[in-house]
Image (cartoon, rainbow, N blue to C red; front, top):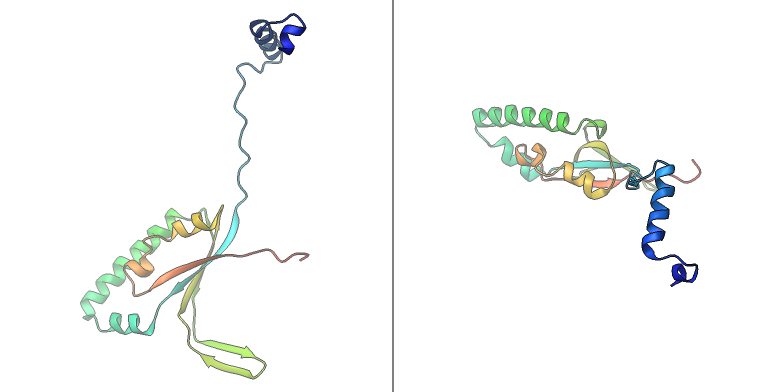
Length: 154
């Protein structure tokens, strides 16, 4: 209705807009580019239990060596596939000490190794670890992924 009030119909208005856009070299208008999501850091901790390790150690030596060889190959392939996202490949973890008000004690937990990756979401980071050789071939029991938040003011 506003167009009719000034004596223009929709066809005239569209033609005018096209002429303006053409003069600005904007027609046809390109779609707006979506701003890329900012990637964030995620800590992946590899888990394993004493029971899963005991089961692994009971395998016949030949079977274990074959699985170790296949596991190392699969892990190298996983690393190559995800190399752009890997910030720190990490390392295996050794015995644990717990420190608190009562002092220092030796403790056991299920943490076996860690890796730090960069992804746009926790779901995207977790997807990298689906079918990971840590638990598909080796005796690991899983991988947990958590975001590493920035400390405000630091």
